Image (cartoon, rainbow, N blue to C red; front, side, top):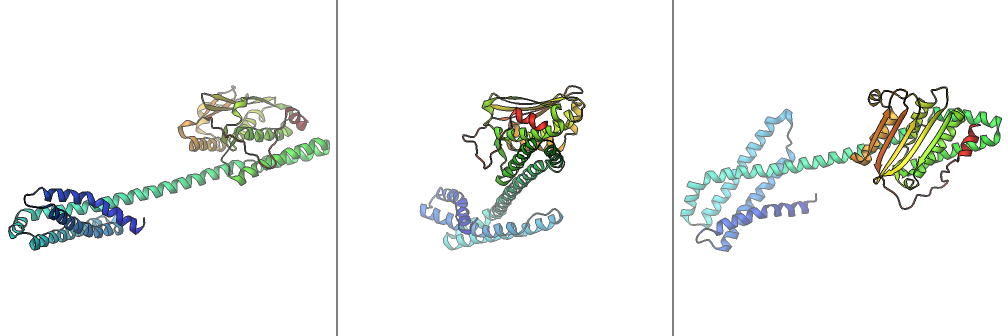
Length: 373
């Protein structure tokens, strides 16, 4: 806060007290309006000038648990000095400008009350100062927390992107190498899909996009699945139930891929036979509902809740950070009954889907099958 702004606010803060004091003086018999205003201005002005010293002390002396006695002694002495100086100034003013009987009445009847008034006024000044300091520290702490939260989200987003490394990338490269030897055309197509996958990750990373349209995220997931079929082949069946109206809804970038990867790793790749992965996107009461499910062995729901993996936990935390109580993430599973993750969030749409250089192209069913052969 600038000094000029502080001075203006400081004067305005004392104005109501000065007006009240002038009203009290003006209500007395024989006191003119001018005298009441002058007396209130002189008295409250002195209190304000002395109060600036109290304000300065409160800004220099902070409460510390280890030095609480020092804190109390300093303010006790300062409040006594403040009260004495204010009382003396008022007494001198009455002595010089008022009749002698008024001065004697002040000394006999009002001196003690004036000292108590000075102590209370000092306490009010430093109390307001410490309250403002606490509020300022709270705002700074909130800003630091918000920044730390933003950094944490960014770190989690980078961690989710990094989940593509190194095993998936190396396994995919090995599979593509083997495919090139057998069928160069399919190997070239797989390389294109691999490049498209990496391009999407780099584009989102470069633009630091926290949210993308569902259509783009689905394109990324479909490309990921096309490359997973290089090693799983026809064992991996994919069923999509996508509402076309949901494609423009914004979702958190890289929120579906960890769920799909989890379903493949634990529900399909670990079994000897075929497995089905189901992707669903529907709009229900202005909410977007996304589901990723597999027909694998499933798991005990209580244990899953206690031992959720890094990917699931990160997605849940990012949902809560972005939408708060408006978003939910539910896990439905049981032994021998598959595994389902359901995310619900507000259906926020963007009027124009962002066009990127080298836009991610979604592989069709025939391409998925041809890459796996």
